Image (cartoon, rainbow over all chains, first blue to last red; front, side, top):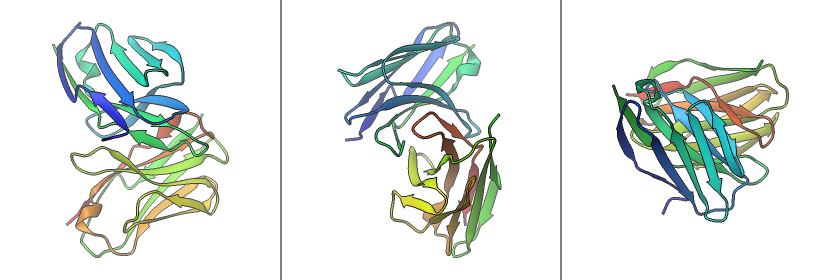
Length: 109
Length: 111
């Protein structure tokens, strides 16, 4: 069993829909990261959080430390949101990332 | 502002040939540096990380090695490439245990 599990693996949505991607982890962490990987391969860090909730534009990330669960929400989705969304966790002084397998999101116009 | 560079962007190499991928960071000092690999159809995997010059930790036994000859330079090498070394290689940096910032990546195809 992977230490970081994401669901769903694939998600297709219509433009404007509200999207939720879930992440569960089984290890102790110091922080959880949400990353976005574009079709060309480049990776952008969206959020780093250790408690509560963060919002940036149409993106919202929440984490429940007790339940070892995080969600990434996209409001008013747009085709440009199409990408792979990756959950990753860090723990310890070295800041090593442990990655989930990613969620492939396709937003259709 | 900080910038991370990787080169080359793409590389096609025959089996058994050597490899050198370079990563440099600008605009910060004493960063933590990381090499990740994404094999085709698989998730990202940490290969090496470094918290300082000459300090390299390996996560996965493999055909690759890493070096950090300068504070903001991180090099990934191999003496003899294998087909299984093909993949997308990403360098990243962070300030201590903070957020990680990724380079543009190198797509390596071993033929």
